[in-house]
Amino acid sequence: MRSLCSVKTSVAAAALVLLSVAVNKQIFNSRPESAPAYKSSSDGDDDCAFPAVFNFGDSNSDTGGCSVAFRRPPPPNGRTFFHRPSGRFSDGRLIIDFIAERLKMPYLSAYLDSFMPNFRRGANFAQAGATILPLDGEMFQIGSNPFSLNLQILQFEVFKSRITELYQTGNSLGMEGHFPSPEDFPKALYTIDIGQNDLFAATLPITVGKAKASISNLINHFSSNIEELYKLGARTFWIHNTGPLGCLPYYFIAYPPNPEAIDALGCIQSHNELAQAFNSQLKDRIILLRSQLRDAVLTYVDIYTAKYTLIQTASTQGFVDPLGLCCKYHDGNPPGCWEMRRVNGTEINPSSCSDPLKYISWDSVHYTEAANKWVSDHILNDSLNDPQVPISQACRKNIH
View 1 (cartoon, rainbow, N blue to C red):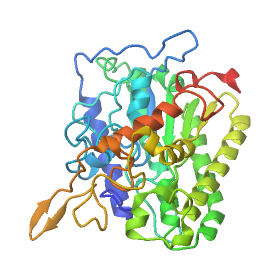
View 2: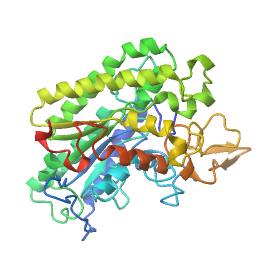
View 3: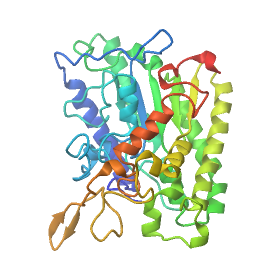
């Protein structure tokens, strides 16, 4: 499951850091005279009215970070909503986009995007190919990943410190309409959706049993990153678990499973059990962190149940072929809607099905806009969250 951003060399990591610094300078040298006014996220006295959202994750919530660093996913990506490639690995909006809509905010600009970005209501640090393990870590002997969560947090630290410095030195003139203020950071919502790539890597070189034994290492790193964000001032966390890995069509194309490995829905049971083991340990750690970070509020969001329920009830929800995919090349093997191919010296784009609204999987790894909306509708209220709270009230401490 390699996207065009799945690079693992230290050279690529260093290049990305340098690009981050360069973009940071370009962004802060811009001084737009005005920015669009957005409605408050508060619909009532109980809502939190978050001044900003800062997102961290992988391609499931990347709104253009990979595109800036490397190459934009080609058509037909973006065909449903944006009507052009938007830097998202989907035909349209992602869950993070529906989060922004629910909070009445603009869609988050990728942190690395220096072309007319607007960070007044937050920024997106997610990168396709990102993993939990840090740059100097190794995941089952596959090497390190330059898009890891700790690098995203480093980028956030640079972003926040630069803004704070400009305000403290009185050089913030013109920033008010384009950047958050230092007071916004502790009041912001911090969303995290990552882990799928780590687990995917675990299913390739070793047995699922050994992969399960290594989950504790992933959770330790995940926890350390949350604690680091806390040290940087984050107080309200909205943390997604990982989805049903064994239901991704990619596996059935690239690594056809034996019939006895399939569950009642047609998914690979052992891979789903791996995801469930990860989710169980993640939930336990979040509960522990609540007792350690006493003035923080951490919401555990059950993406797995939402996605598995959608697959389970696909036909009654208007979807067809729940384990099929919409975007692919004509030969179908291997899938790769996220990149262009060269045939006889000519670059060709993948093809889309006629109606993406009827499919759950966009490209065998990522979801369609229709599926993302369905999942969003079921997690942004309260029934699948721990504690059971809608996202608009996720800052409320007394919910624990």
